Image (cartoon, helix red, strand yellow):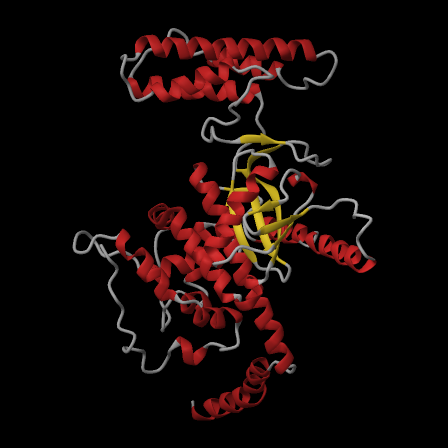
Length: 448
């Protein structure tokens, strides 16, 4: 059911957040710059009109999602800190202090599912609008990176052990008596798998790996025999069989049982040869605004360029005139009216001015690398905790939106510190504690 509309005219007589908080605080300014009515109008149709319990306010849920990625917090942490932070409460639409928690952490999960990818893209579009003219530049830099999934480093032995655990769990739920549980055998084999890189233990560890794979296959086939022909575990058992059948050179390998869509990507990094997740494309203007963030599987970089530019046009309203990319995008020279600039040897007919201008533009393209670093370290792109392919698409767009909002917060912070070098509000607080508070305390002692 649609959330109830709060009466903003009823305010506290003695305390209100707009009159108490620092109006120059970046979160305070950002709360007044975002057009919250866009989200109210965009998500209104996702709720039923007059059935069920009233939902949480849309501004509250959208604000919590933005704060989560701006501050790099989990669902549980952002809900907990909301009840402690007055600026968080004002950002999400409160006018007075609320001592309780705003919602359950699981409600953020349901809200993300409710609004879907289109709703998250609306948040990204609003973050681009807040940045003003910096987002309307004709030149765009595009690059790809890997968004790692929240899975353990995959090995065949780990997957086979998990299959055994899952098969035992299914048998326990359905009341199936297995021919053998293999509990003591697996414990012994696990000990033999240790220290496999030592020359004396290598043969023993390989032999234990084969035995565990054999046991996993036995349990899967036993469940297939004893379960009804039509059951709810068919998809799982088919996945287990696919894992057991895959070889070293198999295509479309499974690296995780709970995230089977994960792909293995090799970007040529010396410190991290293989990364398990999905590929994402980032489009950034020269001034530093992310105007495009799109998720892919493991496509060639050149094939990701056209969908990325379509998203840029959808969010900004215009196609960029120049798109600067690295040599991984070879094969593209022009897409619609956008000219693709790839580093190469300049033509002999070019003047010195033209060569220098082209060289400087490619040097600016390298500025997208630290932006990707900030997305990973500060805005939850380093490890994706959202489930499935939809979760991959949502996480990258929320991280990009948080980066854009944080960029404007940093700009306002510098601007206000420039105009208020003495930090007036901190000085005012210091004046209260040094002069007024001792005087008040002295008079109170005389009175009592």
